[in-house]
Length: 229
Image 1 (cartoon, rainbow, N blue to C red):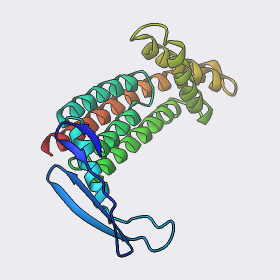
Image 2: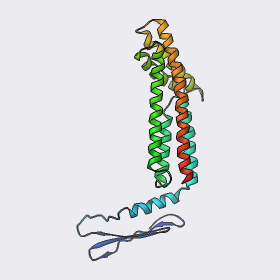
Image 3: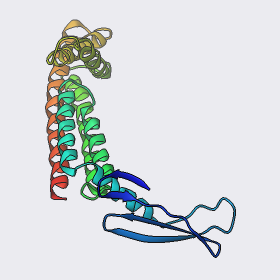
C-alpha cells in the first residue's frame, strides 16, 4: 500500500490466476481492475493508463490546487521582475505553467493553454530582438551595433546585480548603449556610433516594455485557465 495522506491511498495487489497477473488499485472514487498477461518471463502488466490516472488523481490530492495557483502567481511576479532586469523571465513563467499543469494532471491548464503561453513567450523574444536590432540600425547603426546592444545589455545586467533591485535595470540600459557605441565605433565615426547607441537605448526600453506586456498576458491566460478549472 502506498499511503500519502489520510483518505488517499493506492493499494496494489498482484494475485496469480490462470497465467495472468491481476493488478487492482483503490483511490478515492477510483476502483479498477487491470489484467495483463504474465505468461512470458519479464512481461510487465499493462493497465492502459488506468494506473497512471489513479496516480495522477493522488498527485492532485497531495497538493491543494489553490496553493498551486498562488505559487504559480508568485512565479509570474518573479518572472516579470526578471524581464525588467533583462533576464529570461518569460521562460520562468512558461515553466511555472507547465509545472502547474503536470501537478494537476492537466485538468485545468491543458495542452492549448501551454501552447498559447509558449507561443506568447516566443513572440516576446522575437519582439525584443527586433526592437534591439531595429532601432539601433534605424538610428544609423549597422548589424554590429545591434549585436553590441544585445551583448552589452546582458553584460550590464550581470554587472549591476550587486546593486539591489535597480542595479541590473540600469546596468542593462547602460550596457546596451555602450555596447552599440563600441561595436559601431570600430567601423564608423563617433557621431554614427553615438546615434546607434541612442537607438539601442530606446530599443532596450521598448523591448522591456513589450516583453512585460507579453508577460502580463501570459499571467492572465494561465491564471484564468487555472481558476476556471
